[in-house]
Image 1 (cartoon, rainbow, N blue to C red):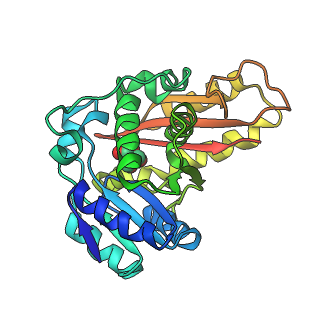
Image 2 (cartoon, rainbow, N blue to C red):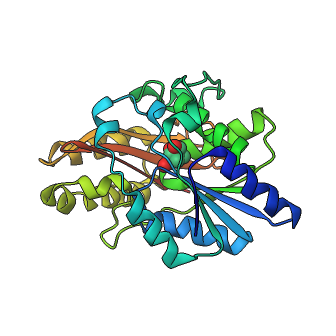
Length: 283
Ligand code: PAF
């Protein structure tokens, strides 16, 4: 398996692949790969001749220094795992911070038509500028035909779509279903940092989302939100940060339901030191 650490190395690989009109899929990651990532990579392998996987813990998208420091970094294990999927059709880009940012470790400021101000945007200052900056940079370096993003970070997925639309980037964005552990917990690299008791408590998040979905047919968003808050008040291990029912396209909280629109429920919860997010389609 080819592992490139520099954009020059990537440029040479891409040049060769383009000579033979090879289709290129791309899965950006921050490493600590799990089955959720592998499901994106397998989908990309089905739809493209080769797949580039970037492994880069992007400093500019962390508003919390401690979270950046503690983010799991498992490059060798990640590479071994990718080799079990394909040694010939997967290429890895694992750059240094300097290779991406040169000397300026800063985000570009983006306008995503307000998508960036909702939910995660409200609680994670500058996060989506950091995500936009790195994803745009990676698209420029890899020049993929298609790029794959998980729906667990649904707001991020919508923001990347907006980034592509506004900048006329020649890449097709593919959203992929949330991959869950058997308990229902949405797969995330952060899950491995959960304490055993928080891990045991965490399936409650998806169970509550499923219950909210059931209620959505008959109850108002306000009533469901109040009900969800109550469930978490009674939970000693999980602290609710937000629960919001929002329009899938604008991500604005729903005021009055319309049968013409699609809605999703979004949730963020603190499980001890770990912040978990999840979401569910409601209609
Ligand atoms: O979803 C992630 O893992 C990251 O936000 C991404 C898209 C790899 C950018 O750093």
